[in-house]
Length: 331
Ligand code: UT7
Image 1: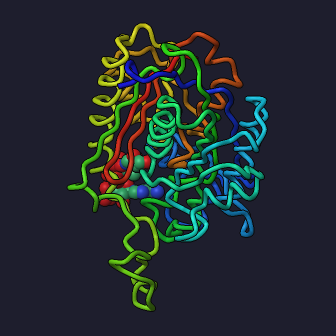
Image 2 (image 1 turned 135 degrees about the vertical axis):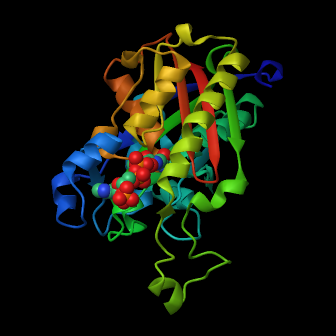
């Protein structure tokens, strides 16, 4: 537990990058049988960003990382550790974190990827803070980056309207104990692995003509099942993280939830008893960007003055695995 560790861990800077190309609900109407009305009322999403054909997850991650380093006033050569959370790595190996390491010139950094789907950024926060609080490293860069457009089945209206591309990053640094990250709670439930997955491309279903024909290399989701688990898991993780940090919901200045569906965000906010204006939402602009979602939202909340120095922030996410996690931090 953090209290027995010699150091604290603070977020020293944040950065985000989303690709220029905007894909609107109206454009999706010409791709699949859907409507702006359906997408808006069922999800809250109005548009999302699409990376260019020659723009990869490592490019998105590197741009967010450079912005976070500038925000923190930290040089890339001071970074000891890079963790990239993603479900859309540039390739199965080497790690996208190594490609980011090269692109930003972080010559001294250890680098690896972490896969916890939409909870990836909070998992990365917890892993990196253990290295910092134990004294192993002083400076870590955590990045949530996704090119989800590369694994979307553009013929499946159940999923193709939901996701977008983007990246967010944070620089973590050693600080006095008691400040910065107050608590993190993580969880998982592999019994529900099948409700949200990409079955092809791994050891169970390597790429073959048949796997391509059966569309196994695309994301598949049983939306309703995921929805039901999401609300309960996010509320549970949030309550546990607040209990661990010994704060109650009234003390939280801003809640930064995973941006998957407006109805999920509203249900979580309602159950936790937070006022709607305390909950940060940018889902309408970007859709669900999986591991990038909380990271991009955090950057926008800080840049927009929704999170100020001294505020308590609650981040909470949920995703494939299933995985979930929540963190309380003092900004
Ligand atoms: O990031 C982590 C995980 N992801 C999530 O958290 C996503 C969780 N799930 C959801 O957000 C929602 O379940 C969805 C937005 C995916 C779906 O909303 P829903 O209210 O659960 O709808 P549904 O799946 O029950 O579908 C209702 C109807 C169906 O038609 P029938 O069977 O009732 O005739 C679907 O075929 O809506 C139909 N539908 C669509 N209609 C127009 C599904 N997708 C579309 C679409 N446009 N894009």
